[in-house]
Image (cartoon, rainbow, N blue to C red; front, side, top):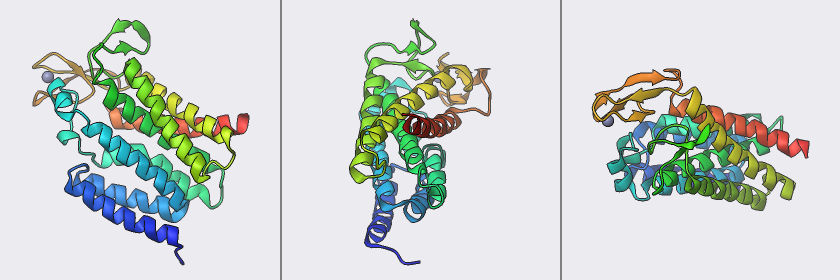
Length: 265
Ligand SMILES: [Zn+2]
């Protein structure tokens, strides 16, 4: 196997960024290792251009997580170790992209699937990380007249949606500039819309099928099986369908939607 210069630089970037993100505690050990495996698949089976888009997602997503982090911890909306990403984060956000990379050689059309799934992953990450900082209470996606607690699965805010829109635009425009969606405005449009739809599907699944727990200490309804240091009680949804599984499903559907929008228009 002969590597071209783009692939060699991408592999170096992968090593450097993984070490930095681990050192800065942006990722846990499992998150770092699974990020390396998924990054390798994207570089070697997709292309170095795909990897640039993947890096954009990772850097902007991580920055959004660290943005006003202490405020998020005080609000009780960050359940994992100070926002450090673990293997579940890596898999739910990047597995669809890695699957597209594995199919790329025989089915080059999957580049739209790739960008659409990353568009959805960034849109949802930004919607969550920026939305929880909103001064207004989130509204339930199934009934916008109903107010819900911050961090409630299926709760949406205007700020969150604006951030989601910005996230999908970042991925669709970088994909267009790099020539990944080599069909100009059609690719741009498909990837932007797929990202926003993916983020909306995430909220819909979050509001309906995703596991919901009630904290026995503070009484808050949460997507996390533990809260305030205690185990919380399951009050709705499927126990096996947590936040990460919901993300994975939404990103897979977004990839498929991107493909059908692109080839449908
Ligand atoms: Zn609690």
